Length: 348
Image 1: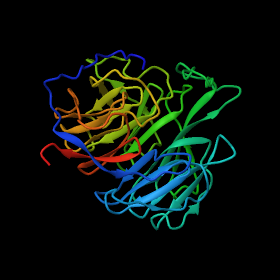
Image 2: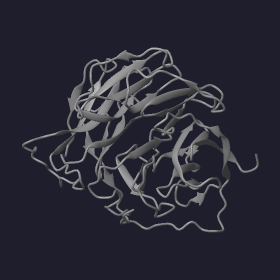
Image 3: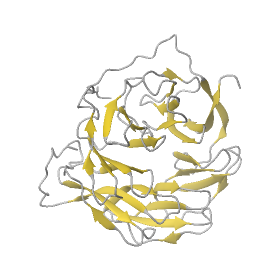
Image 4: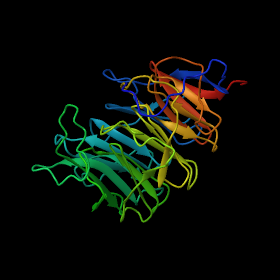
C-alpha cells in the first residue's frame, strides 16, 4: 500500500472496541468462486453473490437459497429493497455490460438496454426509476484533458475519458452528464441522497451536484486539510456513506478516509486506523449509525470502530482477513474465509 500525504493514526493498545465479530455460519459458493459480496436489506433479508452465483437469505444469513442469474458473469449487483434489484452482467464487449432489473426478489429478470460505455458505478434512488451510471470510455484520439491524465499504471489508461450518465425511466434511456474537469480516470463511485443531491469521484477528484447531475461542481478540501487526500490519479474503488443531508464519509480501497459536513461541497481527511496494503477486497467500506459511531474495513483486512466520528479507531476483535463489510440500519456483516460474521456489542 502506497503511503498517503496525511498523517496516520496508530491503533492504541489502550483503546477497546465496543463491538466484536460473531460467527453466523458458512456462506454458499460455486465450484470456482467463494462468495465475494454480501448485501443486507434489513436484519433478516440479504443477498450473497460471486461472478457465477446468487443466493438469498431470510434469516440473517443462517441459511441460503440459490437464485438463478439472468446470464453468466455477474459484474455488479445492487438491491434497493427486498423486491427491487439490479444486476450488471459482463458481455462479450469489454466496454459494455448488460443491465437487468428484478421486481420480485430475483424470481424473474427483465433485460434493460445495455449500459452506456464502460459503466460500472451504479446508483438508483428508491423506486428504481431514477439512477446514474459512472465509468469511462476509450477515446482515440484522446479528449482535451483539463487535469492530469492519471491512471498510468498498467493497463495504460491515458486515453480514458470519465463519464456519468443519468436515467429517469429505469435504465431504458441514458443521458450523458458533463463533469467540470476532465481527466483519465473512470468515475469510480457515485452516491445520491435523493433525486437531486449527489457526489461522485474520478481518480483524486471529487464532485457534487444539487440538481440531479445537470450541473456537476468540483468539491474542495478544507483549509486545514492536506490537498492530497486521495492517492493521486488512481482508478480506486470508493465507498460513500451519508448519515444525513450534510454529514458523510468516503472510504477508499487504497486507504484514504474523508469526511464532509456540508453535503459533499468540502471534504477533510481523517486519520486512518492502519497503513496496510491494497488487495482483492471491498476495502474502504464505511458505515455510521450515528454522527459519532461507525465502522470501516481497513485495507489490511481488519474491521475498525470509531466513537468520535472517525478521529480515532480501534480494531474490532474477531477473525483476520476480512475482505467484505456490509451494513444496514444498526447491523453490520463481514466475510472471512468463506464464513459470515455479524458485528455485535461486546456485552452480548
